[in-house]
Structures are given as structure tokens and as C-alpha cells.
Image (cartoon, rainbow, N blue to C red):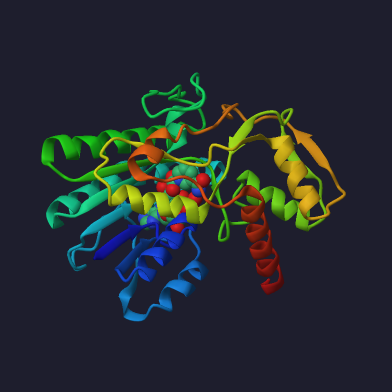
Length: 314
Ligand SMILES: NC(=O)c1ccc[n+]([C@@H]2O[C@H](COP(=O)([O-])OP(=O)(O)OC[C@H]3O[C@@H](n4cnc5c(N)ncnc54)[C@H](O)[C@@H]3O)[C@@H](O)[C@H]2O)c1
């Protein structure tokens, strides 16, 4: 198939491109590099002319001269809290205008469209673990709202294109994902802790550290995303690892794994930081036959090894 991946130079989407290329598809990655990294394209270029990189801003549109696509995976969006607070309008516009361009292109090409949504649509959840039928608890004017509400709007737009224009759509709600190619300084807890530990620094834990997250290794996520795209499931689908842990437990694991004696240091909790996050993945299990395969210990080992190599490369 001929496949467009928006945000293809980013963390998750570059792994997605790699997997799609390895399955024999022709892949076009579109990215304006606002939070992506050209180095992520290296392994993709190894696939020769089956891979194309288009440097473009999705907010402005998808270049008309690109050939028709069979599938459009829409992952372009600033994704870490540091990024979307620094890039509030990019975040809002790529979620609104960017999603519209992707959907219009899907309609014109007869392509199937998948939206990368997020567990943040559940906000600070009153239902735990989070099931897809839960409508969420989002502060519409808080500092995170540019991201949360952009994704909620993107879901509404995607459903409207399916309902009123007949476009084939899929929606994945992604929970915290980690792995190689995250940016060391993107503010997300996993790369932050790993890089602090590799530098022999204390790990910065927000608040009392008893808030929880559940971490999915990136290749597991990519597998679920492709299964969803190729399934008949048109309802939103959670993908994530249900293994929930506190930030103190995570810090402890990383300090022990890296032999970092520096411990942790506590910092004030950011505003609207969700207290709990754990996906209910019953739907993905039942409809996609999917569940995470990479253990937490293996995933951390691979990610630490990658950050070590990256540090050596400078
Ligand atoms: N990583 C996670 O834990 C996680 C969790 C929930 C949802 N998601 C979603 O998955 C997707 C990928 O996230 P990621 O963690 O890989 O982030 P990332 O920042 O590494 O990747 C996003 C990519 O989108 C590109 N981009 C942003 N705005 C663009 C625009 N206007 N035009 C073209 N390209 C643009 C960036 O340059 C970057 O390469 C995002 O949509 C994000 O919301 C990720």
C-alpha cells in the first residue's frame, strides 16, 4: 500500500514508518520538524525509494502533488507537556486544521484515516482504569487544554467525517509510551529520569511521587496501531500498558538499573497533572487480539542502552 504518516520524523511515527516499510509498503513521512528530529529518518532512508520525506507544515495543508494514498496515519502534533505549552497555537492548529487536511485528503483519495488521539482526552479521570466509554474530566482553560481540547476536537472532526462524509476512520487513544528516539529533554518522565540517572543526578519527582502512570514500549504501541488501522473497529480504542506504577517506583527502578546512587529530589506538582493513568485495554484485547509483549524491564533496558549510545555520539 501507499501510506502517508504525518509527524513521521517524531518518536512514535518514525517507529511506525520503520515497521510499515519492513512490511513492504511505500511510505511518505510528512513533518515540519517542529519537535521531530531528522536523525530519526536515517533508518527509514535505508529502504531506498520506497521511503519519501516531505518537509511541510500540515497546518498549511498536504502538498497536492503527492500521489494518492491508501492509508493516512495522522500523528503530527507536539506531544509532551513542555512542547505544547511552548507551542500552544501549533498544537491547537495541527489538531484542528491539520486533522481536517488529513481527513479531506483521505476523502479525496478514498484512503482510510487513523487519528493518534491520547489518554489526555480523559483529563484527570474520575473513572479508573480508563475505559473508552468514559467521557473524561478535562479543564478546558487550563495550561494543558491546548493539547487535550485539540485532541478532543480532532476526535469529533474524525467522527463527523466518518458519519457525514463516509470516510473510513480509526481513532487510537495512546497512553504513555516510551522507547528509543524520545528527546532527552522533552520533559516526559521516562527520558528525564533515564538521562538524570545516566548523569548521576538525583531524579526529579513531582509532588509526593505517588501519582501513577502506565508505560507502553513503543514497538508494542506500533503493533497495536497497525492492527487497529487494519481492523473493522471504528470506535476509539485505548492502547497502552495496564501495568501501573507510581513515579517513586519508576525512579527507584531506574536508579537501581543504572546504579545511580543519587536518589530523588521532590519538586512542586505541575498544575492539572493527572493523578492516575491506567488504560483499560479490554477492547484492544477483544477486537484486535492485542496486548503488550515487551516487559517493563526489557523496555527500560533497551531505552537506557539507546540513550547511552546517543550520549556517546554527542
Ligand atoms: N508518546 C506518547 O506517550 C503519546 C501519548 C499519547 C498520544 N501521543 C500522540 O502520538 C503522536 C506522536 O507523539 P510523539 O510522542 O511521537 O511526539 P513527537 O513530538 O516525537 O512527534 C510528533 C511529530 O509531529 C511533528 N509535527 C508537529 N506539528 C506538525 C505540523 N504542523 N506539521 C507537520 N509535522 C508536525 C513534529 O515535528 C514531530 O516530528 C502525537 O499525535 C501525540 O499526541 C503520544
